[in-house]
Amino acid sequence: MVHLMDKANKFFISMTLFLLLLNIAYAASFDAKVTPIKDKIVVDEIAEFNIAIQNNLYTAEEFTIKKAGYPFWDMYTKPLQNPITLKVPAQSESSINLSVRPLYITSVDTYTLEVGIVLERMGQEQKVPVTIGIKSTEPLIGGYIPTVLASTSISPEKLTRESKLQ
Image 1 (tube, helix red, strand yellow):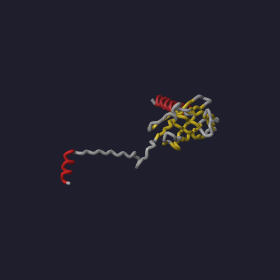
Image 2: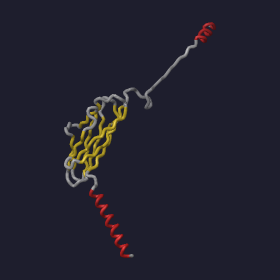
Image 3: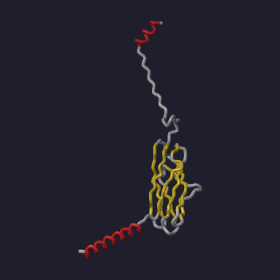
Image 4: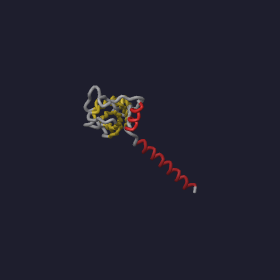
């Protein structure tokens, strides 16, 4: 009985180590994060985002940032790059600012674009959401568009009575 328990313990320890090693082997090659700089704009303004890429590999890597939403949105960097690329040293993080301009968007709404980040050497891609709020150009009072509704009702009987009193 003791011999059987020793085999079971060895089996469970071996499986635990195997799963742990398997998990380490499949760790993500990179992580991408989007931080809004200016994400609420009117239709003639430009939104800005910071895209940070963490390279988890032991070699320097080049990443391509794929534009999303064309022809309704334009994405670019300053200075202009085409394609948009970022070199990230081994086990490090680098970032780049991305400008996003609406081209054919005229509705007040919130839009989410899925920007692709591609690790060129391996062809791995991660999608990161870039969310832009298009604000109204109408003046706001306390965060609300002022709306005034008025109605009048004139009764002919009241007019006649009022006229007779004077």
